Length: 105
Ligand code: FES
Image 1 (tube, helix red, strand yellow):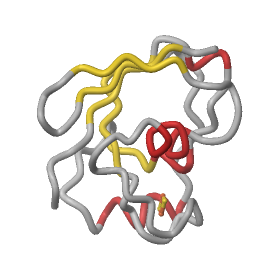
Image 2 (spheres, rainbow, N blue to C red):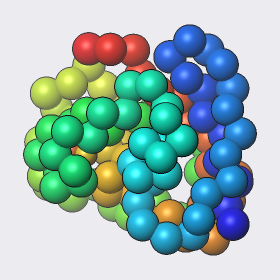
Image 3 (cartoon, rainbow, N blue to C red):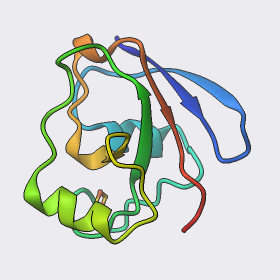
């Protein structure tokens, strides 16, 4: 069960143990993390699951797809750090991931 550290919009540090299945957006939504609305349900069409990746175990994040890149370009995003959490599968190897919920944009 991977352990994930989340810095919320309020600056609170949340420590989550999440199931190694599904996608990161689902784990954040299920943990009631504020700012992860995921309006499109993970179809890569809304960008309301935007996160900043602070640290990730090497080789665990999939490459940014062209659809994801297009959505990120419409946000106040941080290149190299911004990702859509619905595009990141949760695997056991994701243990140690640290992320921050961006300010509302
Ligand atoms: S949930 Fe809509 S783009 Fe991720």
